[in-house]
Length: 140
Length: 363
Image (tube, rainbow over all chains, first blue to last red; front, side, top):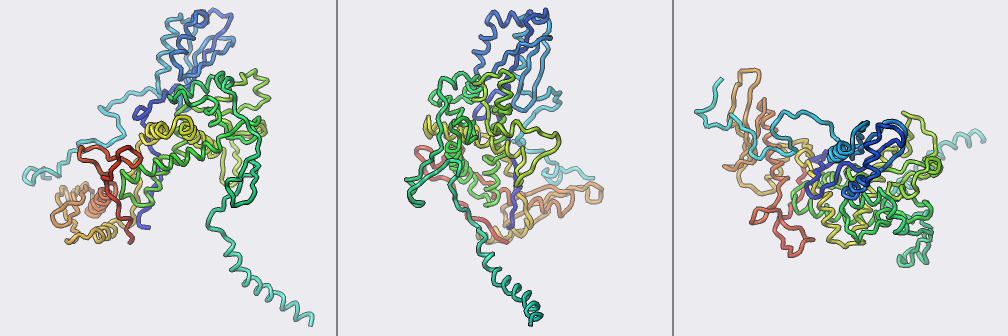
């Protein structure tokens, strides 16, 4: 065979075609007794969490009663989990955290110092000095 | 007398071996023979009468009321934006690979159906949009879209999780009984309870724990496509395949491995019937005497340029240029008069617009 194929897996482009929310599961852990869970207990008893869960139908919410400080655990589809400590936070801050982390992709936050991040080649191509007319080329 | 018999015996064996050898060779099967799965307890009147085939394995479907109580199942249904006609019980069935799981129906049939749908639409897409792909690359491209590892990745991205706790663990942990209906079930209870040594992996027939998991995920993804076809029809299933699978990017330009690119290009041009011979010409260069020279080489047929490339040696730039010319030919994708992608046969008002590839060249 003249041509051999190199096996490669196609690249996912979430949002091209269908979009699947990366955060698929949120574990809400609270303590029924401790003072640091006051805010979260308020979120739970006021029905605020039910309201959020109804809005985010695509996420599986799990409420766990466990002694200790309260926490939110976000499970993402790239096999990462992120635990957010919400001890002593009031209900508004907790809802804020819930919104913020449930919208993340699960990838690490990085400082990206380039203009474009893309899987595709540049549409215009790369400028080449060799394609200048002969008289205009740089001579070494 | 006895001695001679003994002496003769090995010779007889050699003879017998010589006679037997062709027989052994003929019994090696190069094709696959379909066998009925014994777990399904299939019965039939006669082997050739396919309509009489019947599975006698007792199964029942999960009641919709139970499926509705499984939070991960409802969330998965919503995450995939499945139509309301797609029953939750079917989605749960798609995630079940076990043949003996409380008599619940598994995804065996849905998986087969989904696989057929998937392979049709994927092949159609590739054949129409990349009509000149060589056979080997075409097959690799099909695998890159719907191979086990690609579907495993897709299944993972849908947030499907594996049910890893045994019945006993569920009872002791007071786990909600409906939870497991929204999880991927492919590990039997006996296996779950097996004590595992960390860092040691069992390898049976080249099947690892990871490859089994990947195959299970892939099967669930295919079954969901099959379920979509069953509940909502072909158009919905096709849209789903387009959105989730054909929307992925296939790195086709990285999937070619040429052994003799120049010879192949010459052969290809022969086949295409070009009048003029191929010429490879140096178009520009810089720094020939330096440690980092750059050469720009072009491949021409008459005045037509087939490809060009920059390399740091004459040979490198030549090979790169030839490969670019070959890729430009093989990766050709037809477009219509408006500059859009052409229609595929399964679309309405399909009229043939593209080209039919002339096939692979042999060198």
